[in-house]
Amino acid sequence: MKRIALFAAAAFATLPAHADRLPIPADAPPAFAAECGGCHIAFPPSLLTADDWRRVMASLDKHYGDNAALDDRTRRAIGDFLERSAGSGRRTEGANAGNGALPRLTISNWFRRKHDEVPAAAWKDKRIGSAANCAACHSRAEMGSYGERELRMPGGYLSER
Amino acid sequence: MKHLSLIALIAVSGAALAETPRQIGDAYAAAQGGGYRATAARGAEFFARKFNVSEKMPACSTCHTDSPAQAGRHAITGKTIKPLAPVANSERLSDPAKVEKWFTRNCKEVVGRECSAGEKADFVAFLAEVR
Image 1 (cartoon, rainbow over the protein chains, first blue to last red):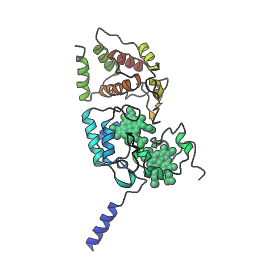
Image 2: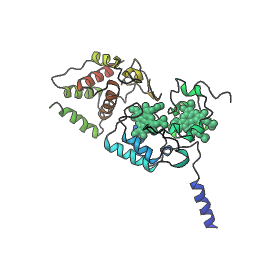
Image 3: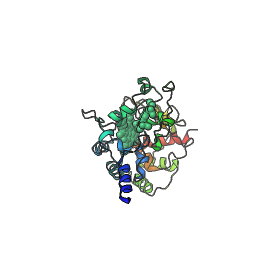
Image 4: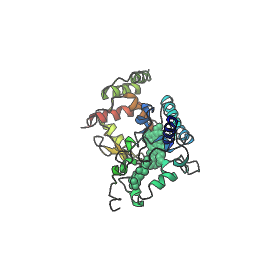
């Protein structure tokens, strides 16, 4: 009996976490939110693979059109954290466009599927600017929370659903 | 000698002591050497100048608006950037390591080269004076 309960608990624990919660793991170094949350929200580590994060962290001085260079010690602390918290499989597939471009969690198959209701005009809206601007639509993205009730689309693109 | 005060600056920041804009500006002026006297007017000119090195970020004002007392917006990500001027945001110009980190990044990206210590001193003088 005890074993069954334990087994059930283990099975439950291995189910993917519900998609509306993507919290930053508690063992994140303080530098992660401070350094990687300055120009955009600190993205959930589980949305890219360890390999992807290695590439991102190896080229911070050429970072998607900006310069996010860090001192070596901080870079290593954040890199180690990202690699041990990285994702794999379903949520990370498709994040690499190839041709040497840096990986983007906003082009993964999973991300596209989750956002297939967002009209093209919304992505181009100046108030949103970029798919990476999660907080423009998800009012609690900074807390890792992506629930439907927390959506605030500037321009009301979804109001007629 | 020129680099001594910069080293002092970094050493102090290691201890995470809060500094005043004045102290940070003075350290840059001293690092420039030759009795450099910073002016807010030169800093203001630098802030408004179009460097046109980066297509999406041609000038400081692209992300920080025409006034450092206002909140800005990152030209690529769209994220709000808190005002740069201490008068509007008391955290600004208090942590020398943070100030130096952003000069290092944004001078390379926007100006296309490192900024001189004198340019940094002028910029700090300008921000500190904004009302």
